[in-house]
Length: 275
Figure 1 (cartoon, one colour):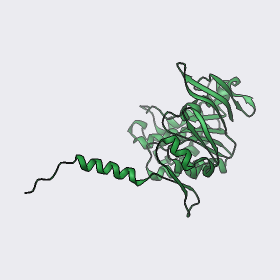
Figure 2: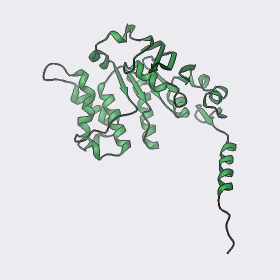
Figure 3: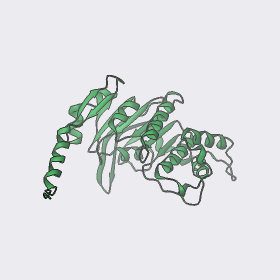
């Protein structure tokens, strides 16, 4: 799946300008950048949820915009950042929403649906919650329900917008390991928006850095994530090193800035009165 020279705007104001990205099968591509840089908007444009003002998106060398909604949904899944918490349904019911594009006929038959849902529940680590009411779950559990629904859709392209939000450290790691497995074992093309730069470097084959709606770097993590670029993009001193134990990129911000904050807090603290 590819986006070429894509521009997207809201009410005439450009949010993404001339952005290009290719999601290859068997690879994870991470989109990173500060808030408002256009990461989620670009992902939504590729998922046909946001109108393009310029450029085009192709899927297997065909115009993605020419596909029917059902055909497109059988090939591309988007796990959006904002999702409702449905009331009055079980976890299994919610995960089954992902099978809607695969149902056919007036009865909506889906011979492979049950197995796909069961597999998605296991992969997302919520098989034991299958009969629980969704509105009784924690925010992190609901996040995993929607992740399972995306997995149940069983497509060759998976677009994830901040999939580790609201998850504790253990489940963040498990989700990222699953994302890596989907690419390595199942040959899925994954595009994922992440805020954590070290997570992006650890999980991705390629990293795109966006700033003010433009792609300012595109490459393997240790080439795309540089101290100079990240300092410019995030407007804060950033140090990028390679962790000698893992070989992954490690991102640091100077402790000096934290000391300034601590000093300011100390200056504002009331002076203790001797007893």
